[in-house]
Image (tube, rainbow, N blue to C red):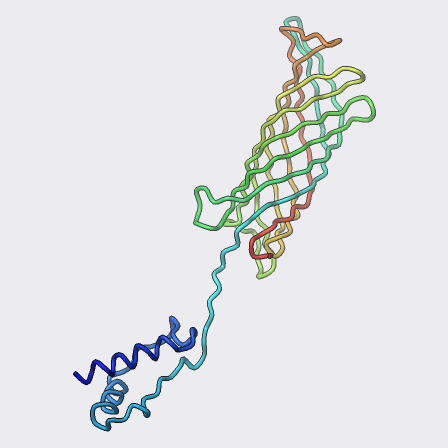
Length: 247
């Protein structure tokens, strides 16, 4: 029966102990030490000599999980494009170079990879491109980008270089002189990204874009007329990732 008060004493002591006494590194009491504690109570009838020892050093472990809240980015590009206008009797093509600006907002997710790695990004682009003063287009695309951080080309504790692949689709309006046409956009990108401290991303992408326009003249659409633009270009940009650990 004397063991019951002893157990109650130990339990009450643990309730009022500091939070950091017990850690994952705390080892169980060995047989000799536990026998000394029992003897101090049962034999010597003195519990004042019972001492409890903390770990020599409290170790804290920080999980390497970085969760993304939001990503904002801007990019500039130059493209070599070819317009083709065709109907049942023939086609006509013209080539030119144009420049574009993109604003991007997105978020990283983990869909089919290791939990909490978040290599897949869903994003929305606002695109503006210009060919001098006569032709310009404004549109949007929704994209899916795979940041292949799991296949790094070079990595250090502060930065990583890895390949990327993205796929986009959306809509745009092209204005030529005083006429406007709407079109469907399909685009793919492949490139390299330099990521610094899990926040900054500098990227260089090679892109291929196909736009199918609803040909119209004087506001009237023509059936049987196919108007499309195929372009290849280079895109450079900067993204900034806001993560929960930043706040």
